[in-house]
Each structure stands twice: as structure tokens, then as C-alpha cells.
Length: 116
Image (tube, rainbow, N blue to C red):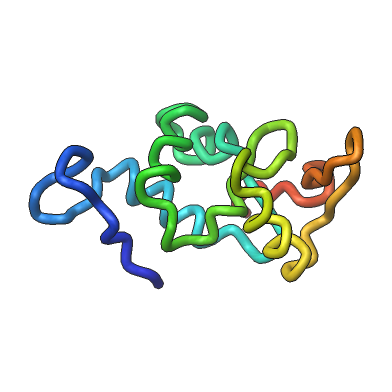
């Protein structure tokens, strides 16, 4: 399992330990199978704490060492500004995609993972 050590002094304890919620988000993200996704809201609901924004914040601060492309927006679009990195990952993993208005999105009906 990758180490989650990319912390900064203004976001966590000085000892490099992650906040428990961040650790839970990252651990769940690592468990999402290749080709499957969860939305930010799905992650929060599964963990029973936080919300989509809090999950997004954790992913933006600490998510570089986990398969971040598997946690997506509720509309199925890749994270804005990271499409060029996410789309090759989706294609390599066989994540179901669909075209909406000429742009690729994850097909949530087929790709969503419930954590089971």
C-alpha cells in the first residue's frame, strides 16, 4: 500500500500523520477496483462522515499516491484540469465511458462501485 506522506505543515500534525478522516478516504480509494469508481459523495456516504467537499479536499491535499482518478464528480466528468491524466487511466483499466456533448464521461450506471 502506498504511503500517504505528502502532507504540509498547515494541513496536518507536525509528525506527518494524516487526520483520521483523510486516512479513511485514502484507504477506501485504494480499495476501489480497477475499472470502477465512486463519487465524492459516495465516499463520504460509505464512510458515514464528511461530505463531497471534504472528500475533495482530502483528495486534493493527499490523493497523489492513490488511484485518485477512481473518485469522481457526480456527473461522471473527470476532475477539471486533470482529464488528460485521468482518461488514459480509465481506458487502461477498462472503465466504462460514454460521450456527452462530445466529451468523455465515466458511465456511472456501469462503473459505480458500492464498496461491497
